[in-house]
Length: 298
Image (tube, rainbow, N blue to C red; front, side, top):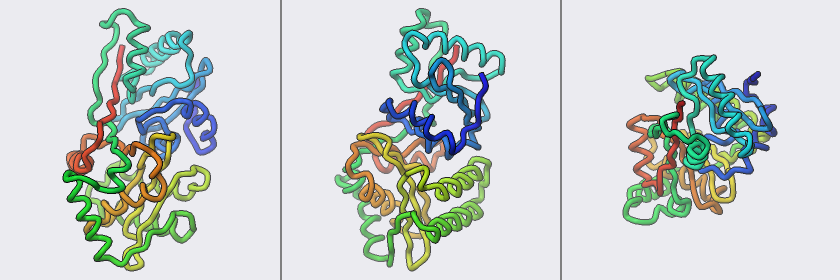
């Protein structure tokens, strides 16, 4: 298999394979793959008319995602080839980022449960929320978020601008660089995220996602990037804000959905990567459910 490094020119072929599926996971999106193409060394190949994506996790372990476009007749053959590739290349895992439906197909193909091991990948579970609740902050559980939102609206001089002009794009990049430089933990993942932000906003017309920037007293103080994956689901990929401005995160979370995703049922706000502060923040919005992902090895 001759894998190709993912790039912008591959958008059409990747989306051709992804969009027939109705994943609730954020992983199966060209934009997700493109954002993390360097940090996760995302590569792909088309084999037996199926899309095979290979990447590495943040611990440096390579694995395959679920094959896309396979038939029931050739899935077993594809898996056997991938098993051989894994052995030849000393890969720790065979598959990660798997949804439960694919796990069931594997179980149907292989009779002996002892032939493979499956485990939940909790740090990569996606947080799914009801869109209408994030637009209204209705109910006691989200009362605190509503208070933060109302405080921001009443106490700040702000403007919401679509990310679609050279000035706003430059302001987003400048703010992202500033926040990165002020972060005490400058790991490789954060550096790759910064480069991805620069890359995606400069190619927003090609990538076709939605983005807003919030200016407070004329200064860019928050921005958010998201996309609608299908008629039911939208994903929030990037959300950055000035932590010194009370309520700005509640404001931008609600406003992006109000503007672009009010007609979907579910908002996917991605995973917490096992980061305690991020997990606490995502749980504070009271998810509808956590979308499980699985690791599979033979």
